[in-house]
Structure formats: structure tokens, C-alpha cells
Amino acid sequence: MSSPSYVVCGCKSWNRKVFDEQIKSLPGTWRFIGKKEELKKELLEKLKPRFIFFLHWSWKVPPEIFTAFECINFHMADVPYGRGGSPLQNLILRGHKTTKLSALRMTDALDAGPVYLKKEMSLAGTAQEILARSSELAARMIGHIIRELPEPKEQEGNPMTFERRTPEQSRIPAGLSQEALYDFIRMLDGEGYPPAFLEYEGLRYEFRKAVLYNGRLEAQITALPLSASSS
Image (cartoon, rainbow, N blue to C red; front, side, top):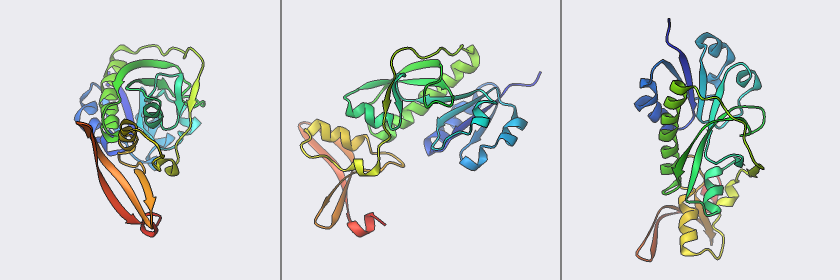
């Protein structure tokens, strides 16, 4: 009897890292897909995956794929609370220190599918650190799912949906406390995210690597001409 086949989709560097270091050594035959154009029904029909796992995927998955294959995506919220876009930033802005990583069956309704598994997760650190942590936790959850084959359960409760944030919303608001400013900088400090910024007298100041200690907030600041930052 041949070993089961699985596919993992992820478009970020930390997704590939966790696949190479942890996931591909799990039982079964594994394939990684990192680009939108690689996710083709014809390829999947050849691979015949038992599950397709989506760690971090920036594109809409065609219905012809999630209706033909059992697709599981990982969402950084305790659904039905926190469905929708930018969960990391929306959770931190609302004062959450922890969340749950939810493994959901993909359906045509965003983040509304039945839940296979949830695991507690810290929201400490930069966006980059949180996203890497979520991939490592997802790897452990994948191991549990392929071993235990849990039956997904419908979500319970009233949904609360987050709105996807825009680049302009990375502008630092006036009147933030020191701790709120620290949270604002760190929640945007990650690969692919527009960093926290201010504009003043023709320059755009971008903030990264925030540290809060002993009553001090320190951050790395990059100053760019507004013409260069908008090009």
C-alpha cells in the first residue's frame, strides 16, 4: 500500500523553512507549492493529496480546488471571532496578548468552514516572529491532523469579521501611549507588511525593531524622501 500524499502551500519564506525543517519529515509523501501559478488542479489530480494545507497564501483558492480536495487553511483567530483580513494586526490593536490558531476546512465563505483543531498561541514579539511562530505551530497541528484525522466541527457563535488593513493604515496615529506605539510598530514589522510610518517636511520615517524596556521605547528609523517611498 502506497503512503498517503499531502500538499503544503505557502508563499512566505518562513513557510518554506518550516516545511523543510519539520513538515516534510512527517509520515507520507509531501509536496510544497509556493507560487500561485503552481497551484493547478491538473497537478493535484496527479498527486492525489489526502489533504492540502495552506500555511500563508495571499491569493484566493479557486472553488474547483477546494471542492475537489480536502483543503485546510490556518487562521490566526479563535473563529468565528476574527474571521477576515489582517488578523494579527486587528488582534493586537484590540489588546489581545494571545490568540488561537485555527485549522479550518476551506469553503466558499471566508474563514467560515468547520474547525479541525485549535491551539493557543502567543502574540508577543514582532509580526515576523509571530508569523514564524504560527507556521511552527501549524506544522505540529498538521502532524496531529494526519495522525488523528479529527472530524471538523461547525463553528459556533456569532461571527465577528475583521477588515483587511490598507497600507495607509500603517501611518502612526496621534496620541498613542508608549505601549500602544510599541504595539503599533511591532505588529507591522514583518516581511511583506508596510511598516509603521510618519511623514514630516518631505520625508517619510519608517519604524522597525521596536524595543520597550525600563520606561524607554527604542526603534530603528529609516528616513526616505517622500518621492522615493512612493515610487
